[in-house]
Length: 179
Image 1 (cartoon, rainbow, N blue to C red):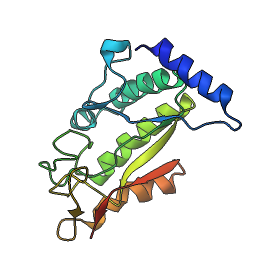
Image 2: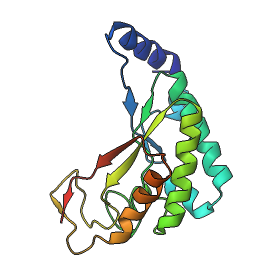
Image 3: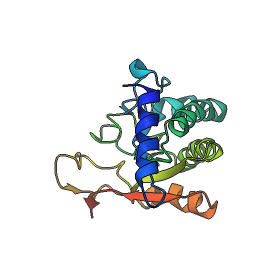
Image 4: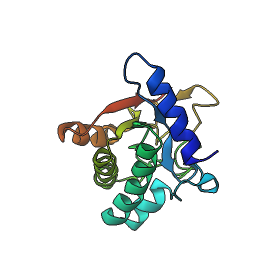
């Protein structure tokens, strides 16, 4: 209902727990945005929009606003950023929802690192997704079994390699695809 209501809920959950809880949410921005502006949370834009602008300061600005809202609500793990490459812009799970920064692994890595840095500054962990890559899929794995045997590319691993090598990977979420 509101940032205050969510903060009370997460505070109550942490108080009742015997160990610190990871409280997570899917707050990528754009169409995958669980905390809506109409409920008092900050406006967001899609990762595709940010990749098209290719302005790391802008990406960091939006990521900082998101991370601050999550931290103040008691959420300490964001199931973002998406590091899928937008190989198939018509992909019903990635391209259609503007969830990828772009098709270039270096661009995706730069923007993902900016998002992660902004979250870490606010004490929020991040989850890279969807390993080993969902951006080439032609079907939506939420609706069907997805075979990427003929579409998946080795380059889809590059953002993972770079972010892991930089020591910035908190968690990795796997895709429900097969090849």
